Amino acid sequence: MADLSVNICGLESPNPFWLASAPPTNTGEQIARAFDAGWGGAVWKTLGEPIENVYSRYSSVDINGQKMMGFSNIELITDRSLEDNLIEIEEVKRRYPDNVVVVSLMVESNPDAWDTIIKQVEQAGADAIELNFGCPHGMSERGMGSAVGQVPEYTCDITGWAKASATVPVFVKLTPNITDITVAARAAKDGGADAVSLINTINSITGVDLDSLVPRPVVGDKSSHGGYCGPAVKPIALNMVAAIAADPYTDGLPISGIGGIATWQDVAEFILLGATNIQVCTAVMHYGYRIVQDMHEGLSNYLDSKGMASVNELRGLSVNKVTDWQNLDINYVVKASIDQEKCVNCGLCYIACQDGAHQAIAAERTAEDKTMVKVIDDLCVGCNLCSLVCPVQGCITMQERELGQTHMTWNEYLSDDKPGELYPRPKHGLTIGRA
Image 1: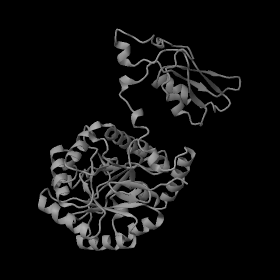
Image 2: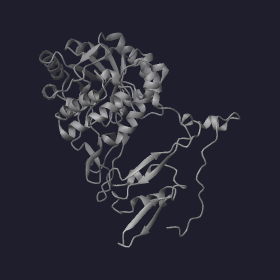
Image 3: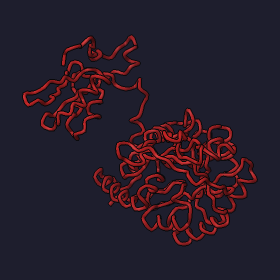
Image 4: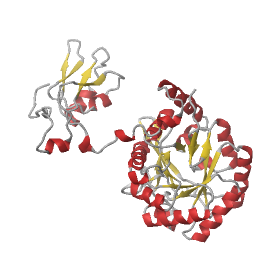
């Protein structure tokens, strides 16, 4: 079986599966159970000046019966004393010396405060620290969390303070509530960060109670914007991880990937786009620590199927496959193909294409009074919409056409020296009564 161990910033982890700083890492007892279940590392729930949380603090977005596709919280950092946490950190490291314990920290913006707490968690045995520059609610209003992460100068300066005090690796957890994530990553690197973790949660309001008119989660007769996470944020996280991995300025800066990870496939995607390891929160809150067992088996089998001896061979293989739009081949052609044997005559592809795409699917009633759909090849632009809305796996596929056109980018098309002819574009016009 493939070797799943990873090394990030000199920290040897038995696998790339870590828990993110969140409720699942709130106590030593929880982290001990997680390590027993198979997690390679954990980032302790953020320590600092303990706060008081409100009771109602979570809300979710459910889609078509799928619970917690998006998850939001207004919970703040630890509400447990620093003394209790330090005792438990020491105990966990004593019992699990081969697992990685990173401690998340958030304190006021002055060097002395950072120096004091860093020395305390190091003495307790922390393998590394993670600077929480991402929390978008509650703490940001106090000048911490994303209030730091959104200002590159603050990110750089405070990272520098931490590095001046720390003897263990320093991770910087980045906020996605920013226009360009590479700016924050560059600032962290300038401050001396050993690695970056991303993404933290996204500013959100998940919905409004239509009876009380109070947004969720309801706290009396008020609410607050929260931090959004879960499967819904995974595409945003993958994009930001890839952006940092591809940026020459941050080349070589290790990335700990976070955001909507629940399966081994999610893990593989983050690693392919440049992450060294990953951190999980929402999926554990939903399903428990044991999901890591499927991650172990699935990722190991996948690596075996690819002939890879180590998870490290997977890292970054997809980074150079992400490019700017103008570098894409505009002569690459795919067309939709419908397998009539699998079609259940629901008509979804026809409706979607007629109203939301390029009117390239015709529909007619059969003798059996069913709706039969077919692709109008000349009008199909290969947009994929029909295959995405089709409820039957493999019924509608996108077939590449080998038409002999030369590879051509948009910039080449605009230049005077064209490498070849542009594949003819479909001609759209008035089509009333066609179907």
